[in-house]
Image (cartoon, rainbow, N blue to C red; front, side, top):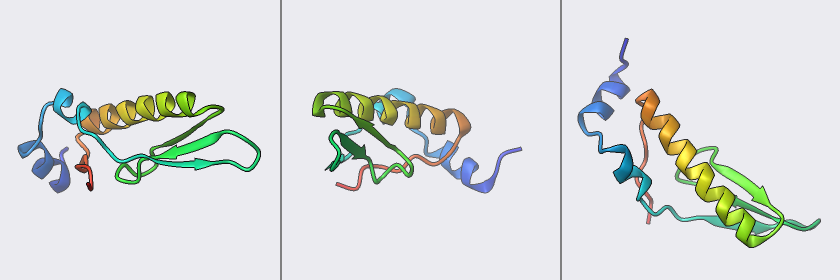
Length: 83
C-alpha cells in the first residue's frame, strides 16, 4: 500500500544517482574529549563521529549516501539541500 506522501514523492522523484550528487551543508563540532561530530541537518538523524577531521568527513559522506539510499528505496521524501 502506498501512502499519500509516497505517491506524491514518486511522481516527482528524481533518479537515485541525482539525489546522491546533491551537496548538503555539513555542520562539524569538535568534542571536548577529542574527535569530531558531523551532522547534515537537512537529513534528519544523519550524523556521525570520527577521531580526525578526515575520518569524520568520510563517515558523514557514507552516512549521507546510506540515508538517501534507504529513503529512496522506501519511497520516503528526500529533502533538497537548504543552501
